[in-house]
Image (tube, rainbow, N blue to C red):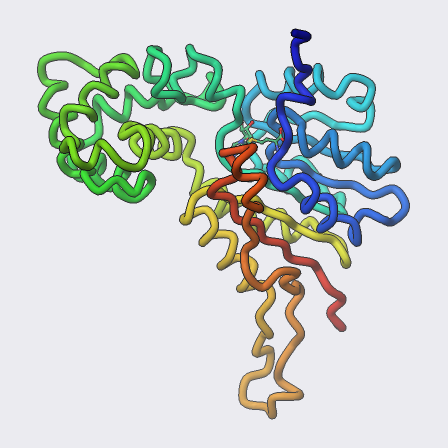
Amino acid sequence: MAEKSLQEQHIPVMRDRVIEMFAPALNVSDPLLIDGTLGLAGHTESLLKEFPNLKIIGIDRDPIAIERAKERLGELASRVEFVNETYDQIEKVLAGRKVNAVLLDLGVSSIQLDEANRGFSYAYDAPLDMRMNANDSLTAADILNSYDVKDLTYILGTYGEEKFAKRIAQELVKRRSNKSWTTTFELVELIKDVIPAPARRTGGNPAKRTFQALRIAVNNELQILEKAIPQAMAALMVGGRILVLSYHSLEDRIVKNAFKEQSSVIDALPGLPVLLSKKKAPFELVNKKAEQASDSEISSNPRSTSVRLRVAQRVEVAA
Ligand SMILES: C[S@@+](CC[C@H](N)C(=O)[O-])C[C@H]1O[C@@H](n2cnc3c(N)ncnc32)[C@H](O)[C@@H]1O
């Protein structure tokens, strides 16, 4: 059987809805979009094909993702400015330019999970690394070998929503006094030992939550997102749209709160009658509630199971 191309293998999450949501902002002359999470350039490729005048600034913190994106895009790459940075550097990258759209498709990409030696996956035995950029200093092993029980419990419980966070944290600290944590399979074994058998039989691989939590902590994902959203919104011109695909309730909460803050009327002159004192907010929510993937998308692409899509649009505000 012929091998499938990258394009056939990798369909970006909620692709059609993303295109539809961006259409009002991108059907203008010479539109510019920032894809802050370029990854395998699945969304970027679809958007470049759909909007022939579109140019994209494609940011990714992972240099390997940038190389793979260039390969995938082929000739379309001539319409993309590639930037190896974290997306909280949007302001610096734009250097005063305004854009029509910003896309953030958060989290880890399928190539990062599939590259066995990077330590993102509990399915491969590898060093406990999990850095999205090998130039960053903190690895998953550093966290496991140096954080105390309280901090480990917080990471596993909050970022991984792991019910047995404290028990796992206690065992991690106890066992490292004999031998430092070095490989993914050692961690998988410990989780299997610690989580009681009935709890292990439900909810997929019991290591999944711990691996997700460590990845979020290693890459400082939530703090970077919190810094990035206001910058991304500030970069939009009137009519411009920001669309975020989140996969974790804490990510979605950061996005929801930032959108809400900028779309609520501002009490500019407190004390005056409502009509005089209220200033129109700079953003409107395009969808009031986060959207989810359809059942058929979820069955063909399990990665879309937990996705939440939110969109906001900059509106004209009288001076
Ligand atoms: C889910 S993937 C994006 C997939 C992409 N939309 C596609 O269709 O191919 C997320 C990407 O964002 C990158 N990433 C995660 N956090 C980042 C950050 N703070 N700054 C820049 N890139 C980041 C990851 O390296 C990964 O390549």
